[in-house]
Image (cartoon, rainbow, N blue to C red; front, side):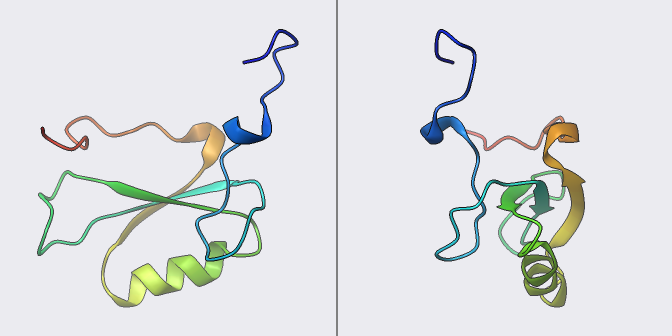
Length: 83
């Protein structure tokens, strides 16, 4: 954070939709069961406008696991990538 405790533009999470630079409001937690262990969660961020579109994209593939407000998101235990 800066000395005024305001996030710089580089620190503000942005929407994962192609070409969108709006501030993220939602976390879409997902995993591809053919590639990831069941507890692993990858995330996309979404603004209000793109939440439904990104959710549908992941949902039709059976990847979407959860949609949570960004300020409420907590990375699940065991969800981190193993090194």
